[in-house]
Image (cartoon, rainbow, N blue to C red):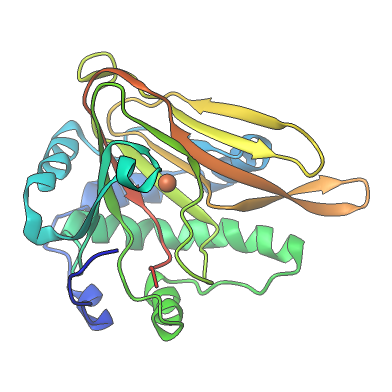
Length: 255
Ligand SMILES: [Fe+2]
């Protein structure tokens, strides 16, 4: 999608500035991941309250203005994805984004590997660096973390963020704006489809700085004859007033 030259994969190993993302990493270290796993097994979505501070939310949302940080900007309407805009960060990622992605990867990989074992799929590496090495070897070299901005009447159609053969099973979105103050409407929505059945909708209420963790494409559920795959899609309902900004953390890179 972007016309920018590819950044070599080694660039993603740029070290985070001291302190950047430390508080978010501390929040991630304190989380009861077994409870997050149970929530995902039950409802396909789990909330992490207060992952980012209001100041970190404001700083991250403000990155949007700096073109040099992004490899590609997408007008969603032009692609039929909905209405609104998003922008993929370039490598090296901003320190906070890099720190969040690296710190969230190991516990999410552990949850994903539990699912993959149930489905008979091979285990994923334990670190982001090792996983990205697999992505890059498979030709998926472009970074996928992104900032999404929606104005009044914007929305995001239900979709899956797939960018190649390699798909990390979970992803994360962090709400950077304040519901009720900066915007109204604009709920995170997830649809869960059981084979040969109708879909179930899940709406996740987020406050500023909260993250939601959800499956990218599938998750296993237990049936009478063993595990089967539920199909997930996610999107955002219409923003009825104001402006809503989100940070999306996707772990697989794009072809
Ligand atoms: Fe998405």
